[in-house]
Image 1 (tube, rainbow, N blue to C red):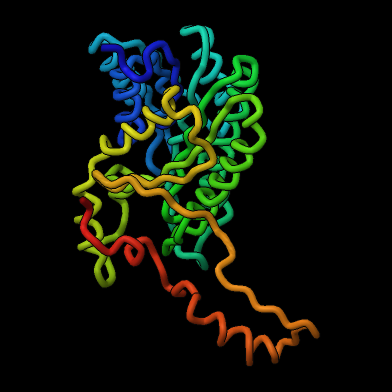
Image 2: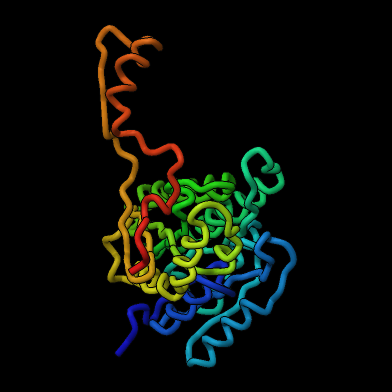
Length: 305
């Protein structure tokens, strides 16, 4: 029986380890030829090692699949373009782009440096733009294609010590939505996934503060392989009418996120003053406020299923 991605070509960034590796392996098992992109940098984005990408590509080939390792940095526009060029030159086309590559440089807000801000934005947000931009001409010409971008609940909900990462991941949502709208007429779709999984990146979460140890244990129970099936589906023709959505995967649970929409409205025909806002509007709105200290553990307080 043919896999759901038989005959497709999929490029997966950050595919040497963790979630990206599991995505690459499953896409290959489902019949896709896979460009395994990973420069093999450390979690903070330093250094470089061909090993992770080559290992994943070799594992795919050993299992009878098709794969090629690409070691470019997605933060470099030319490097990002080489990912798509490798797909077209080696396998004849490109059908899906999985923007998974990422680094972490966590720091509490008042200590966050410009260098750490720029480094995280470059890989996550600019990297997603660079690879997507390179694939777009091919998608338009063939009248099909799927962008699958990795966001995070840090961007959707917020997290402590991750202003750079949260901003990048929220930016990816905006990027995906605009791509979905701009490219719909060309038959191209764009979606986001926020993964819950234990990986090299989540392993860096400090086990401090109330409930931190319990949150880490929950993450450790969620394998990276649980994320891959949704990616394979979204890359396939079976998802041809699914676009401009935000999903999350939490072990065996798949979540569809809402987008920001108005929840309360109040009109004062004579116009508002600062004092009338304080006296009338805020008391009326307060019951609908999100909690000021909300993080994903408050939104998902139950054990993974």
